[in-house]
Image (cartoon, rainbow, N blue to C red; front, side, top):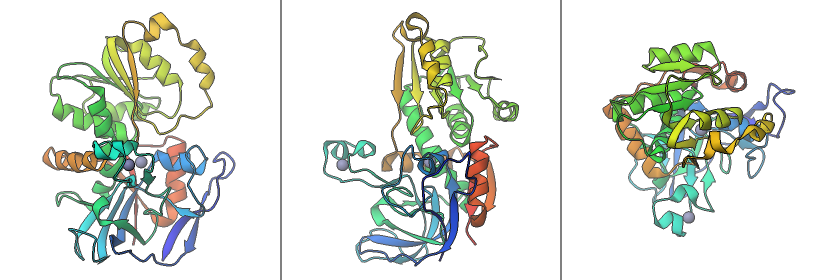
Length: 342
Ligand SMILES: [Zn+2]
Ligand SMILES: [Zn+2]
């Protein structure tokens, strides 16, 4: 089968073709697994973190991709509810131990044995992949194969970040960064909190324009001041400056939720500008988001179908995965990027 394979960790400023198109053996499902014919796979900023070594794969080579929509081609005897021909999704959570205190309390995203799809196991940048039956999700009929892909990471983790924000209807929400996750959180927040006004901070003018089109009350550059202080800000940027700026834009008692798996070190010096009275005092809080649980994925897919949320998609053939990744690196983003497998 065809796969875009990651063979080494590299610096994307020097190597703009990090993945290699290879012919690799088709995987075989275990008793508790499904073999999926991959239909689409979303491209995520986290893949840049893997390639550049901020969250390195457990082994190399590895097939990236953790927002997978596939059709069940084979099901092991103990693979559970799904049967051949079903359309299912796979998310960032590939497996967890099922026994630790986190798994037993519905916080399997924090499990010390958490394994990530497309990092600790081969993912969806390929014609086929395998997944445990109990870590796959039915895809609601109303979504096309391409629309469903970004819901599985950008959407599900965006949903988790909005839950952790603890927002109440009518409070003012800020979104720092407006990529795949930001635009889905905006649509979700408008539905869950109809009286809430949303303020978007984005560096690129096109992203700000896009945010206004989707209903943001205000959109500005990350260094601009919104017309009022915000009750909660969700940061999806890969750097530090927006964190410090967001803290200054928070109202007393406000909460900053950082929804990023890793931050890059390039502007870490900016943290020295942290000023206790301006940025932290008055009971401001900072919380990070880690991974995603199965119930986040299930609950978000249900909500997304009910609203319905239709993500903005840019499609690429599998062979153009490197191009899609570099466009994310260079922030040429409008909505979500999805690979289509032929
Ligand atoms: Zn992702
Ligand atoms: Zn566990």
